Amino acid sequence: MARERSVFICDAVRTPIGRYGGALARVRADDLAALPLRTLLERHPALRDHVDEVVLGCANQAGEDNRNVARMAVLLAGLPETVPAATVNRLCASGLDAVGIAARAIKAGEIDLALAGGVESMTRAPFVTGKAEAAFQRTVETHDTTIGWRFINPLIKAQYGVDSMPETAENVAQEYQVSREDQDAFAQRSQSRAARAQAEGVFEAQIVPVETPGGKAGPVVVSRDEHPRETSLEQLAKLKPIVRSGGSVTAGNASGVNDGAAAMILASEAAVERHGLTPRARVLGMASAGVPPRIMGIGPIPATTRLLERLSLKVAEMDVVELNEAFAAQVLACLRGLGLPDDAEHVNPNGGGIALGHPLGMSGARIAADVVQTLGRTGGRYGLATMCVGVGQGVAMVVERV
Image (cartoon, rainbow, N blue to C red; front, side):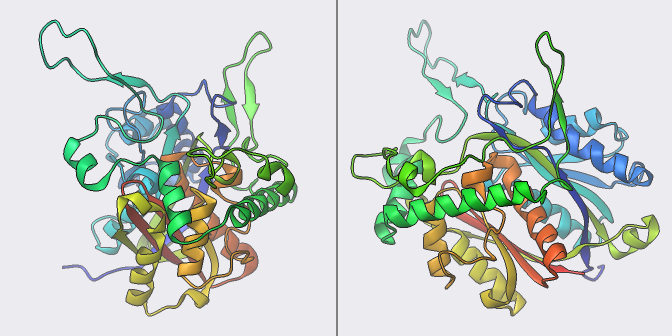
């Protein structure tokens, strides 16, 4: 058996993140997924005939992202037909899982070069219906697949409940005593940091402009994240709770419903040397953990703890942390559970899902790439990417700058 090998992240790109019904609304998910793959090949044309595997995350897969959207993206991106591809689904962490699966295959010596990432078009998520269970049935339930539960199993509902994502955030806020004021303050910081990052051009090296169908004026080129918006604590305080009267979770302190795609190059040391790649970070490891579904937002705590213990590292040694912002309530609960300050400068330094948006299958790949980019810019050594997952899970990955 081959010994475990080093895995390097060598390049990463992404599309801009579009608002729900926004600039990317007319772009199919499979076309969206192909864009970052195609861009990586344009940047590194010598790799075209040497990619061993493509792995993409996608949380929906009920519409144009059906039938293994990763394979569709490979074909649409112009990769050889001989390149295999797989789509993985761990809901919100699908993109991070895709990176982890590719990294593990390289570590195990099974492959040398992979492209991994994720995609989601929440705008284009379809409505779906089940087949009638009896002849001449006159009522058929329709489900919006954009986010959340569908075709609910009665046993799951009875044993665990089927709280919506905002309801799980309210549960976390109540159980971990996260106030509305603290949530709004965190959301405002996310927006402020994202605005600063945009102004400083932090994302320009990552973003692949997307040409979208236009009207009479012709195609429109989208090159900037759409979701960030100027806000204040006063404006956030005026927003009504999503779930219940007296609640604390609002549209302002929750992540967006968005569209986007991301991909990166992962390579073994041999592939780096063979193809003249520049390694940016080494993937040290990945871990996942399960938590009660009704407080799914705390998943990063056990996942991160498990991973750091395995690597003999401490949270304090992480020079940058990207903790996906599904909701301010759960991010704050996780930060406190991990012993980090609410306003830590090295946590989501360029904003997160609240400001930038959260295309479910893409976000994990985005935050992993952001960790690598930030380490390169700041000269830090270790970085952590972690996120919660619907139905009660957490995933974490640690990388080291090289």
